Length: 181
Image (cartoon, rainbow, N blue to C red; front, side, top):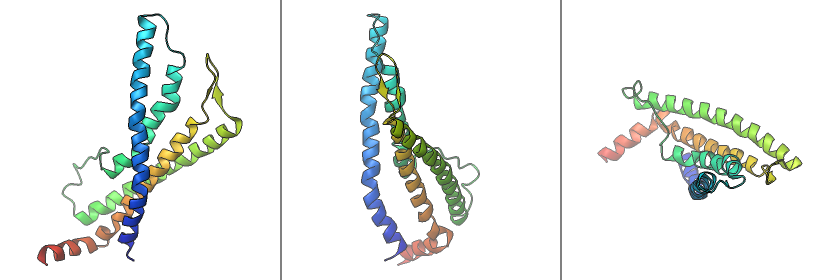
């Protein structure tokens, strides 16, 4: 079995997980919008804000909306790319630069994920919460960042591995044979 077949098989298993995370993030935008709207109406029209809306949005919903879809955005190549200096480079050199930047992202988000995983474990052990009108357990939300970073790191690594044939000069010859054959 070729390396590309293994990557394709892993993607088939991994893609539903990325889709689930993205779906959760998209669905969470609805309660976020309704909670903020209801809170503003309650605060300024009825002089009675909804308790803990800020905490729910900032500790739970917004974190998931930001971190859960990172892998999906990477898969769709929708992150910001600046190609001013790279558009005239050979495909092989671009693949090297892409792989390097993907690996830098992998390391950076891997470190963020590891640190946030440590924080999530500590928060879970002590059942961290914030007190207020409503005591809110925030230890649950601490798991959102490591889960999102894990998915993003896997996607970055897969993207970097998919650049290897171009870096090795194999993809260009395969494409030329496909066009001539």
